[in-house]
Image (cartoon, rainbow, N blue to C red; front, side, top):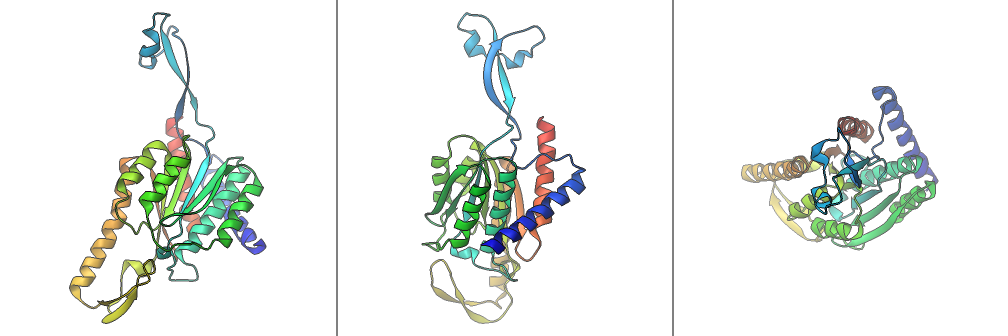
Length: 293
């Protein structure tokens, strides 16, 4: 546990140094809101934008009132981590699930330093672990320890159910980071709902072994989620074509949903250093924050 925390702290320091260098110190944390939220109403004053008039309140006959807003300076941060069996694949030393856990740890430590509330829910086809949002370094350690000790009860995936569970739990608008390989079906509607209600960041974990199956003839393939073994002719041209098309469609589907609902999207390769990839995400959100300020 001590070694894991030290490792995550090193990653966090690398991220902060990279951000400081690239952004020359002008950096808005990923944990800050990117827009405005309704605060109150006040009497109309000369020079106010007529588009801000609250006609429902003004219609009551007590004068003309305008809506006032406040910047979303702080929101709760909520991590959603897919811990199903399809995540237990990796080309190098780390599997997708290991990378996902590390990213959660880095973000938890960063949130603690930013004095932001952070919580986590781990999902398969059921709730595997839930820690409600709280502030402080102890909360970060609690999340890291829970992830390190987690042994999922189920290996199956049901993203739609996991997202519905999150929507039931998190009522107030929050920053939600959803980390998954998105190897599932029929979750598009729920993902759209999550993006509309919250400030959503999607991180899709990918591994090079999934992107292309080498032609090895007829071989047994183990489905980790069902435990069943099937025999496939991996050398067949039709199989290769269908597999690549399906993989590409799965990735582009997630990207399309994120673009439609203006959610941040980041593809993370398990065999690559994810720190600069996270830096790029932070830079993107920094630019978004500047535009909405």
